Length: 270
Image 1 (tube, rainbow, N blue to C red):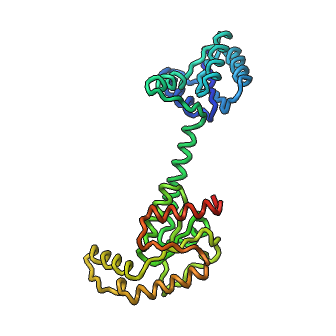
Image 2: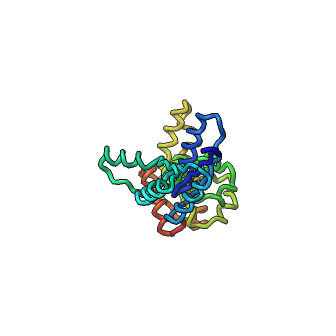
Image 3: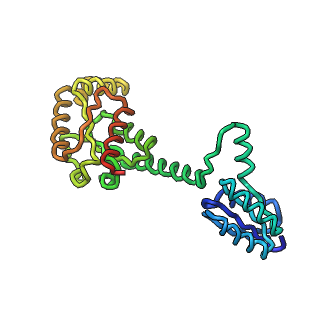
């Protein structure tokens, strides 16, 4: 292999094969000329690669998950005197033999997993950035907008939806003394969900919260009349938006999340 050319052939992007080849070539005192051939779906393309590799006296390294494509490349390359190395095939075969499980033979699985991972991270970062009404601009960017008075699980629900459903969620607290951001009335009502809770339940939650902070449970924050005032304000706002309201008084976060996900799926928003 005088000119050190390596053709990296893949039925997906070819990142896996590229990384393996670079790692192996790093053990030698020369810089390889790696030429990637991605998204190979037919034997015609493989035939062309073999022909070019032969003329360049190059090596072919490949990650093709379909057995017929792997066999074709190995057999035809051998006929032409071209060295071809199967990076992933033997490992797939070995795992199949050990586990007794039949492979999916589905190209690009790793890339899709990576894309899902980064989508999840993006959703989590979004939930943190636009938590508790920090930036009203997030309302119009969000997949879901949660609104409610304090201690109605807006933040943990936002994180759950981001973590498990990869949805970008903004949440907005409602208090009588502060006008809701105008963006709440501009976003599609189907994206908004009001989180409702009974006064007694909220009173109990807030008292426990104050106790955990070492504060008196007699503070205005936990006063039942104050709570009723906040809930009245909440009712007016969600009425104006005309969005769906979910009673979270006796619901686990997972249950509320499922209601929201089912609602958006039925509306075919995502």
